Figure (cartoon, rainbow, N blue to C red):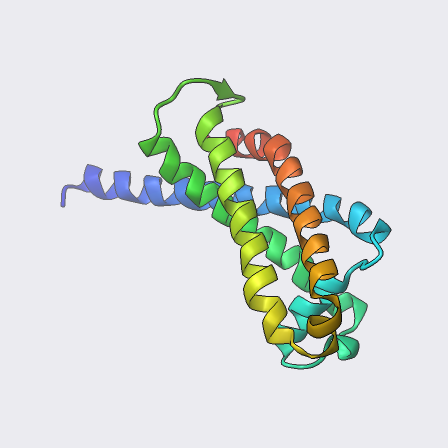
Length: 170
């Protein structure tokens, strides 16, 4: 490989990593914004407690608030990084019609939609059943509704924040 080719590969990988990092920051911002509606819902932070309990292999009652918050915000960062990766892929596949900041609008909206759908389905249909117990038997519909509302808030914030943060790395 020619020296210029190696440099080109290194720069493209650095660009990819900076985009994913910017997406993770956007995801963190969206997860932070989710705290307001989550705190006003009757089920509150139940989804975060359930996710943390599955990771810890314990019951939601044994999870501390700090642990639930770490899982909640960490998940937001992972989802934001996933958004950036999906956006980069779709930007190369979907035609460029309209731009918002320096991000192509249609791939951006499609990426946010796919990530929100993935997060909701993953937690509502994989994580929640693994938690089992009383919450799954008695509150599954309410918790899934909470996850759906939380996921939509996450997506709404990502629609606004994502292009701003990602365009700063382009």
